Image 1 (cartoon, rainbow, N blue to C red):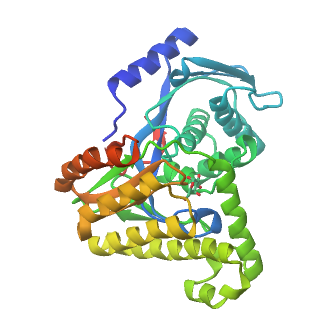
Image 2: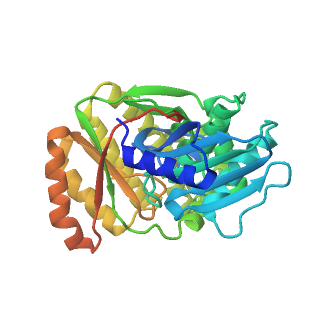
Image 3: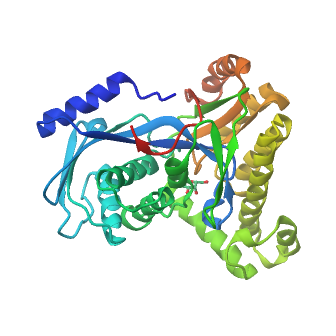
Length: 387
Ligand code: GLA
């Protein structure tokens, strides 16, 4: 079920109509994501297990006959942007959101796609800066819009890769491929086991008895880009010293046997990545078998690994994860999700434990940490498409 409300849609259409003096002809959407397990494994060519969520970026559009793109951002006080397709597309000096749009369109052109301009209005309800991939959903939504509008010969994974290229090369963040892939290729009621080397995907059915709860710690994500890039470099250093292409190419056992080759810090980083990628494959089997006790254990181990080896969690999140894991026991699992340094946790639990979990957080989280949590119950959703 989509949580894009009638109000959101009508506001989008109203802003579009006011701005462009005509109604939009089509709508396209792309979802945010929550990662169930497998963190910082994507840029190491490993496995991830995310699902697309029912929070989306929504675009209203009409094609133009000229080579101009005009955009209005409903969620940024109707800020506007305008650029030409027949000149060099450059970064916008002040509007960060514009750069996702410009970058995606520029990279479509760089891959040889030919198309004319468009009028676009954008809105969305993916919480921003919370680690739920609002930016990937914007990149994929724009890619999907141009693909649909101009019948571009692009597969869904190519829409994802185009979004990642825009983010890496135009926006300047060295993210992996997970977020864009699941936003483009997600599937209702399924998680996506993604091999980040081959981009092969396997749909893993989400057990009906499990609710997916996202808990936003509301800890503002600080130092994200610099810490993210540092982790990436440390992983690359490990792979280089071990003489492999990526950490994907070593098992946990082999890594342990080569421990003395790496500094203590780099070993810990590699240990997280290799073990979390292995846990991801095990977790997808556990989901298939509806083995919640095993899932619970793997999610707990994943969190500890992010906390102690990769060092990307923050104390308020560690507190909430501990609190919920004691509450859930073997009936559910909980861990931080996303890039880290704040942001969200994901918890899987029987539907009848949701209320108790929310109550427990309300009673204890703010009192212990000074932050107030926000919770979302979401469902695994389809990837990008016409709305
Ligand atoms: C961010 C990046 C992803 C991935 C995660 C960590 O969301 O965009 O590519 O690396 O962090 O798993």
